[in-house]
Amino acid sequence: GAGVSQSPSNKVTEKGKDVELRCDPISGHTALYWYRQSLGQGLEFLIYFQGNSAPDKSGLPSDRFSAERTGGSVSTLTIQRTQQEDSAVYLCASSPSPQVNEQFFGPGTRLTVL
Amino acid sequence: RKEVEQDPGPFNVPEGATVAFNCTYSNSASQSFFWYRQDCRKEPKLLMSVYSSGNEDGRFTAQLNRASQYISLLIRDSKLSDSATYLCVVTPRGGSYIPTFGRGTSLIVHP
Image (cartoon, rainbow over all chains, first blue to last red; front, side, top):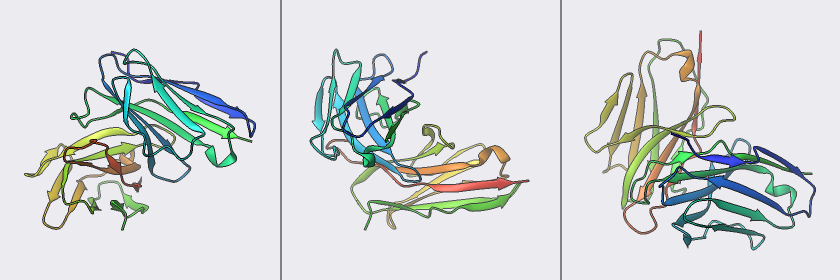
């Protein structure tokens, strides 16, 4: 079956612009996670969804970052007024439920802020 | 102290070698443990879960030591295709179930 998909695969933007990143999880997966990974760094947790609600937003680095999930499926991560330090690969993962710990990752969106 | 710590490496080994990585975790209430593999510029993929009794999958063996709070991954008969970064992942018991990823250990297998 189809895996997790993310779009766009690459995004180059200018400092100060807003960007929207999209994640399509595996069908039926109720848990969805957003991470970011800077070059040579580990995965940084951003936000977690269970269904359409986000019980844990603790990883969002600032109020410029927001995310939503609709219909228990597609999620979008929005970064407003992008800064150069936002440049990273943004990874989305889904799992059948939060208690099922195996996560299936999408290929990521590589964001470059000039 | 970081929640999950790994030696970043790189571990540079010849084909056929046996190599082992350790990962330590700080939360004694951690429940689930995993090793993920991440190839260069690719997404992480689950390699194997780590069970209390230890588990083996072909050339790969994972073990958990709860008393000392570490997990290990042993790779026997290394192949060139094993070259990747290996991420240790620890999930808490209950609560938000948010996994914590280590920064990874880089393995380079050379001919």
